[in-house]
Amino acid sequence: MNTKNFFTLEVINCLVFGIALFFFPDFLGKEYLTNPEWINEGSKIVAKGYGSLLLALGIAFWLARNSGPSVARHALVVLGTFSNIFLIIIHSMAILGGVETAIAWGTVVMALILAIWGLMLIPKERDIAV
Image (spheres, helix red, strand yellow):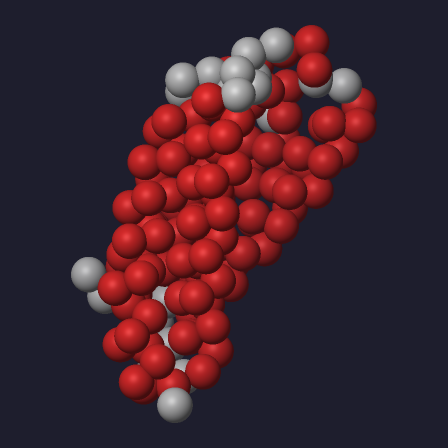
């Protein structure tokens, strides 16, 4: 459970969802939303914007995966950890509120794994970065 493997799993996660959101927002909406009629031109633009952000984050994690100890690497571990914690909260609320289908629990589980992993890495990275 090292930083390189954490970044690699973040890359996979970011690229899968980034590509899906950027290129196939209709498909993802039909799979995740309980009411696919909520998909409109505005929601597609928001999905594509978020998808482009995920693609950029995936590139950042990819470039950092072989980096040595640094403040920047520590910052990326913190970013990955807390973004996954927020995803757990957002998707859990959406599922329990009837906005997303049960398939979103897969996203919650993946985010939970990455959040726990990141929380275990932060103290190690902090010692190196300070």
